[in-house]
Length: 559
Ligand code: ACM
Ligand code: ZN
Image (tube, rainbow, N blue to C red; front, side):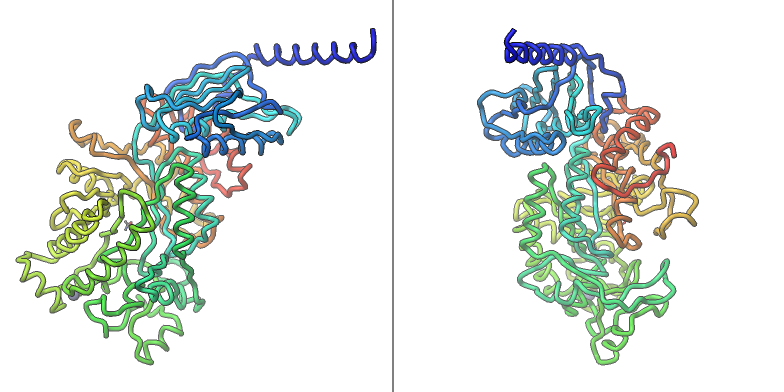
């Protein structure tokens, strides 16, 4: 036999045996480890091999998702796999309007083709996230990549699946924000709550009020140790996001099907804005106070030379809040919100509303005049007036407000969504009044709390104890809520407050693996959730943390 014929025969036989080997390959349970748990999964025989012939195709409208999948497959296989609108290919992405769930998808993998069908590009994106978790590299690393044959049907339990990040107590650059968004996307979360203003900083550029960032984004120092602190580090600290950077983050998130909700705090937690524009305070001439005499040397000097207001250097709640009596306060906030709404296309704008002491309002002539003019009974009703007025403005621009549960006090604004953080109570009360609710109770969703009771061996945290298992057992729909009000619970979110979280590595440590548990709470049906099974899947999921170089806690991971 001529040599080339022999070579052809060997090649043919080897491809045939390879095809057959993977066509009938018996997969194991361990090959199907997905978080969050899917609605239905059927394990099948066979494996799809990613190789130089792999081609992603789909509707033109799916170019972003198709390219994203091509990039993932290329990165892991070393092949050059791209997306083509239409044409022929063995990975097909398909919009199918018969799939009812807006965010759901159907993923079919056989030895020779992969199909992801969904009602919308968002569902396709989530199908890709599941596919990504099924990818395994061959025994020889980088030799080939294979995917076990499977049939998956999947859709989320809750429509709002969020993660918050406080970038004020400590600043996190755009690059980190993007990686945070990537992590959310990997977990099929769909909302990033960006906490942009605080006592300790104002972090978003506003054209009309440049001093919000030139002054308000910087503090002269930060307390050392746990509140009230052992001293002040006397280090100038700060940073902010330009309008261009904000646009970049919003666009980046949109590609990953994540809505960014900005939070502009009012009427409390506003010391940084007041330091920039003291007229916003009830008492512009009164000096800012740092508890326990922990003020930085630079701020002391500033106050001695006649500049009373400073950006806060300590944590907690401060009496110096926006004046509810002066018209200038509302003009300022409306101008700010107008610019914020230009930058963020989200339906919801978070206006804060938590922890607003009423001490200054009680002794402010402007606030007292407002109370009288509006025939308000007390300062809680004055806060309600404040939030109602802001809601009217936000609604007039076609948007909706979210506020922390204190906005219930003194009466809820008519269209407000309540974010329940002081336990479930506020959320239940709001849902009973037929208001939509996002559950973020500090009992289960405060990721700034310790993950271990052995606090001596943990980095300094704010307090509390929130182990992984407790997050896993979070139920955003409280048993105490009447069934006919369940639909008002839009979903849940965890919060990452950063008083003590001063680095990216520490933020990742507090986030993971608790966010992975939360993702299953928010996505998977109760009947599909199981703590023991989750732990098994989490141990497989860790390889994604490792591949991404993430710093994560190992409590509860069997170590
Ligand atoms: C909050 O934790 N103050 C909302
Ligand atoms: Zn006032």
